[in-house]
Length: 219
Image (cartoon, rainbow, N blue to C red; front, top):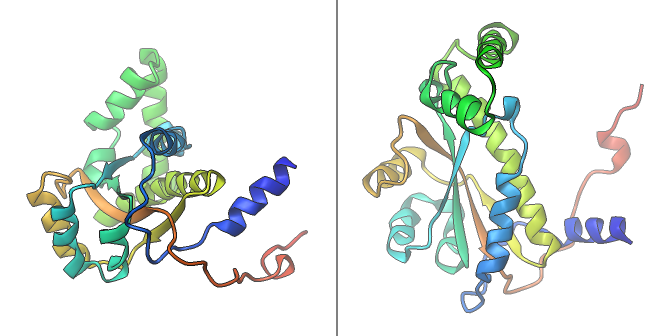
């Protein structure tokens, strides 16, 4: 029964293009969704993301002209979330964020801190070659943020809440607004994705996916 319920939630979930503006997610349910994001895994456990919950209708309206993929979601979502990922400078082995994670959060002893930083530096420099461009580390951090995003949307579907992940926006003007509003500085944190949460106003089309044989290879 548990497996059936989980698959039912995956079938329930769809990219909701418009929410019912009169229905709001309870504080308890949204706190639960945020907790599923907080508990999500990340590479090295460095949690290279930050989540901004955008409830101010004035700021939402400022974003609309530059968010072509969120025209109906921005004004109707019960909760509108911005996923921010840390930049290269914020994720270098000697950065304040990495120090905070290994010392304050993970509480590693000094020798373990140095070893982890050494392994992490090798990962950045040669294993994944992420230091060739300024954007590469931020893109990698964005991949980590998408794990939390996916977990949050699945958890929402499990309790009957709709969602819609959104990449349809003009990055430069949206980030300018976020800087002006003190949401993201553009130097340590940059926007990677938006997502709206709420309740559908109409039923979606049947879900379409490739067959399992088309996407899975066994050897």
